[in-house]
Length: 178
Length: 215
Image (tube, each protein chain N blue to C red):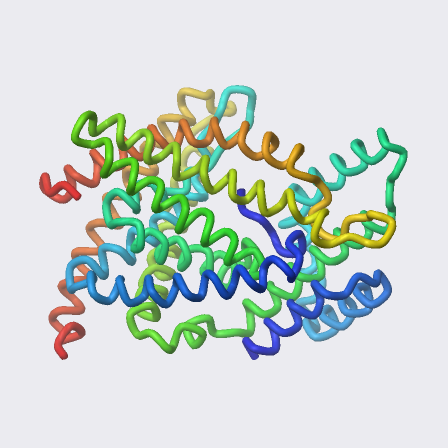
């Protein structure tokens, strides 16, 4: 599955035909089934800022030279949306831990890091919601600095405490015994 | 600085995968030699932490925000190779677990942010800390952002030369070096200053939590 996804990504970047890319996007959305609209919406939101800036700057600079290519605008946006949608679909169906199965150390690192990332991300979201719920008016720059610092400080302390706990857990289960 | 999928030509990202694969293989070997029952979980949670900290927006006057990457801190605490591998895992997590970042841009992002950024930070810290530790940490954070930004700007800037149609229409990233270098370096100078401050504060913080043990 991973090999198929990677081959598809390489193939898509070698195709420069708008019709073929649009047909491939339709195929990917068909594969996604009921998730299609959600994936497409997520992909559009993800690429909107970067692609928006690149497209707007390209149009502005090319207009000065009188060489605007609508083909290019369509090509780059269609390809990026297609690749991002495909990646979201693959991320939902591929087990990345199998991709690192050749190295137990890396598999362990990815497992622990991703579980930590999810837990810390949830904690940070709680911090963000706490600031919002306690601020009747939008917080000022100073408050946002203090909030960022407090959140980062808490996350670092929690991460280091979790590292110690994990070390004890692994040692007690003989993970490091040869 | 994260480059999404679709802007880099296969003539560039495929060879970059080859280069990165060599460094990943070597880095994995170095990592295995260095990691033990204390440092392995420590590195794993700092990798997870680097991922989450990269989502913490630091507000700037005017309503915009910047994000720390934590590469400088990882490099000065764990060394350049460990930072490279950790950043690569973060990028893989972003691409495959959370659907952020790009799989075609993964080797460029990993080589730029992890290898070049990590090596620059580690070298600056090791080279200068005997004179001024805080200055060395600040420079480590600054360089861990600026040099990768320069490398990414160079790679993006050569895309129109590498991949274009017969009439000159670009097929991937459309802007040349005269646009990409200033467009990436100037904002990242600001980000780098913030990263420098965060590296100084973060190093002090990690040092205190580890009970005074310096890297």
